[in-house]
Length: 128
Image (cartoon, rainbow, N blue to C red; front, side, top):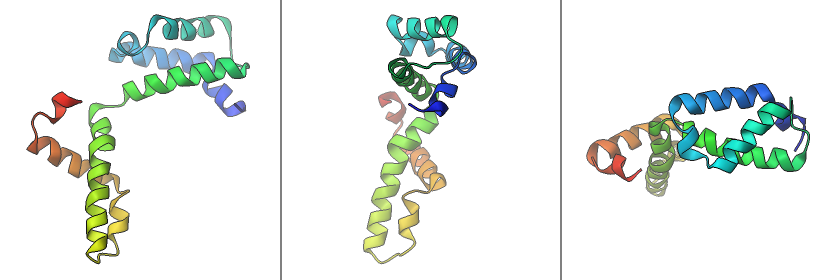
C-alpha cells in the first residue's frame, strides 16, 4: 500500500465515509461489530494509517461500505445492464455491425437496458 491509499484512509476521509454510511442507513446493516470497531478506533487513534496490515483491513471494510452506498439503480446497471449490453453487442458483432463493440462498455446503453429489464420484470427489484 503506497502513500495514496494511506491518504484515503486518513481520519477525515474515514469520518466522512462513516457519516455517509450512517445517514444512508448502511453502517449497521453492512458492517459487523468488529468492522465498525476497526473504523472507530482508527478514527480515534490515528491521523493517517501507516501500517500495511491495517491499511489492507481498512480498505476491505471501506470497499464494502462504498459498494453498499452505491445507489440501487447503479447496482442494477452494473449487474444486469452491462451483462445484457455485452450479450447484445456480441450478437450484433456476429451479424456484422462493427460499432457493436462499443455497445458493451456504453454506460447509457447499459442503463437503458437495465431500466427496460426492470420495467419488463417487476420482480427484478425484489431479487436484488
